[in-house]
Length: 198
Image 1 (tube, helix red, strand yellow):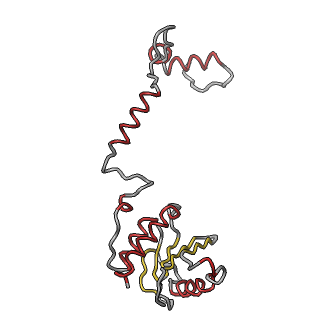
Image 2 (cartoon, rainbow, N blue to C red; image 1 turned 180 degrees about the vertical axis):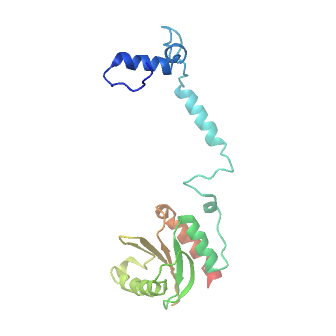
Image 3 (cartoon, helix red, strand yellow; image 1 turned 120 degrees about the vertical axis):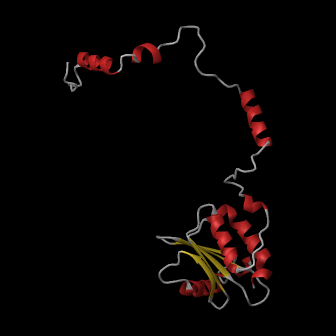
């Protein structure tokens, strides 16, 4: 039988081809275990698993970063400029771009993939939008975050609280989903560094 193509319904020819191609398939690797012999795998008890889990959690590897608690999150950051601040923020939330706008709508820092229209218009519009949005619920306090979901991308912005008339809007273009879990941490880091950034 030199022709290796057979109709799929011809079982005799198919068996002969199988035997020719894999002569040891039924003898060595696929032998059925004898009745009463232990299986080839080891079943782990719940007690063993709990001991293993407690030993792992007791000795975490210092070189391994976990997704839930980044190493950078554990220590307060010290920023000397808005550029270093937004670079750190972009790294934390994996945003495509970031910008900082002063209270008059001027861009004072930007980083990342700048949209074709730039940030100047977006910054000024965000400052005006914040003023309007604070009127929606005046008894709710000052507006801290704005989250805009467009059909092509997402823009989030943090409005720095200040007692003076000078405040800043820190905007992020297309942040990662981890943004929500890190929002409070970003807020704290930016507010703590405001005296260094003015």
